[in-house]
Image 1 (tube, rainbow, N blue to C red):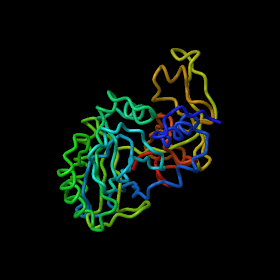
Image 2: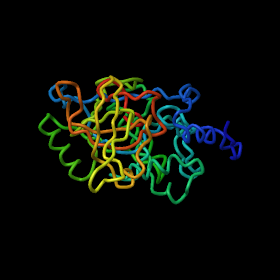
Image 3: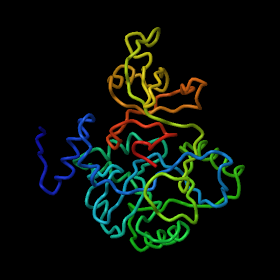
Length: 307
């Protein structure tokens, strides 16, 4: 039982607050309202003709759906943005990312999770829009329609994601390297002739220099030397039942206060061993509020809160 201390107008946010503060709670209510979004597969070199796709930066923000009336997370929880933030926004549905800047994911996450919106924090956020879910045309048409729509809206909190086209895998690798050097996370490929549809397919692909996935913490391994009396590594289990340890990527504060046993975390890795163990695994973050109830490997299912 949770005491809701917010005004009636914030009821949806208050209900989400109870869920956010208790990750083990039920996501069933939010799931009923989850928007039907396009989800990205992982790009495999040589599997597609790159020239048939538009390219954009993959932002390290929070995936958000604008219904025309409210901002929702990917799992359907209402985001408590200030009224001024969405003032004047189009009545059409929008698909995009709440973003502050490269390498500032934790900052935007803290802002979005706040059930009583902090105006100063929200003034740093922009809604980077990359698609028009209700538009019936192919993506190339949606790109043009989106740009025109946002120009008419004239909102300082809305911005279209820059889209461009390239010819081949060599150019794609060059673009990816430039984004990563600048502190970005990766790229998104969106097939030019694809219609907007729910679910995961090769019409939407993410391109990164590494892969990421999720696993649940099963034990804390004590540290030695400089990490004496602190966390040395997390023992984790993947959805496929693979148990392994992650010993890098933690701040000193995270080593002093590691994710609890039973918590799901996101990690990055570079391929798998012959036994299916992630190679060079590195801790990224604790799984956020906007997650499926069960962790899923990137190669087999959705990321928890982004494309």
